[in-house]
Length: 132
Length: 239
Image 1: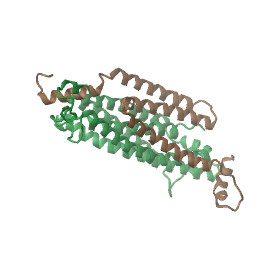
Image 2: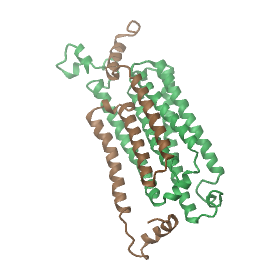
Image 3: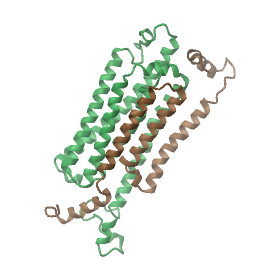
Image 4: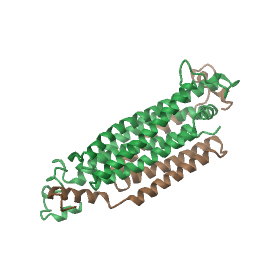
């Protein structure tokens, strides 16, 4: 390799090699296998008779596990700088804040009177679903 | 960066070399590692914005899912789990081929880079092809929300309450918004992928720096992650 490339490219090759941490083929195939396994688990879990909030939580947990695998290994956050960890974590922290504050409102709403617009809006779905 | 030690003048950071001479490192960076970390951080800024961009749709999805659980299960039954599963396998595989493409770029193997990128592109096309088949089916079955939304007249829901049909329509709104926004991201990713694959095929010098391919990989993996959540949320709701 070094016979046909010049000095500059040899320098570049060394630079990129240092960043690549050797051959990751086995690691990538392992992560891919785990992702396919988790995919089968999530399809299998969907066909079990688990009541609604829990079946959703199972699907969510498996999806989060798959996402973590992709982020850490395919997206190389595992080997990334600390500040990249912070930025990656913050994106999901902000998402969690958005979800937590919104659900903190919706899940704690108690119908006060039939006349409020809030109650009128939620009355029809409550009847249709036969819940709440 | 260990290659710094190969240079004698390691006291002055500006004399460390680190790729300036080859044009790989822009003049305002000390070395290739600093440049790589800066580029990576910038990409994660963009991806953090994307997380919240899709997050709004996921928020709407979750609110209505817990408000109308029965309707969501009914609506999800209209989607093909088999095609959804097939598409998930396509996207997970494309993430693997993209990871190999990024590695090929890092070791400066343009031939393998082109092959992995081409494979990723084909898998992306197959994903969009399946999506087109699904959307065509949804259109023919009057599952597209709007004036001609005919779910309440369909056989599955014959005799059910009209509210459920409305909530099923709400699910389909979210289904088309979420899968549509995801598909737009796929198209954008594939356009960039195509340009880089062409450059790799021609052995363009602009690809000497692997950072661009790596950042494109981050984007592609992000789009894959969105689908990792979309598949069970949309296709796998049990009645």
